Image (cartoon, rainbow, N blue to C red; front, side, top):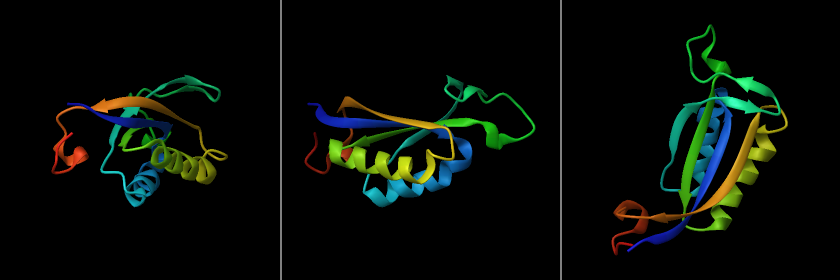
Length: 110
């Protein structure tokens, strides 16, 4: 059986990886996934992870499953307030269902 969850997605600059990971960890989320990414937005085209002189110009995407919307919004609010005035970034929340994830659902299962 599936358990309802919220998926928080954060796309921002790679230089913020450790700082954002700390905020997610401190929020009580059980984990996250990070991938290098690229694309085009209000701050022009960003690298898609191709080799370049400085790795700090790459973008990353965090995906965080949370048990409820409040936790997802809390994480997003902290990140936006601390970083999005000075760094490129966007955050959004989607509905999700967790399947076969005993670590997310707890010992009783989903």
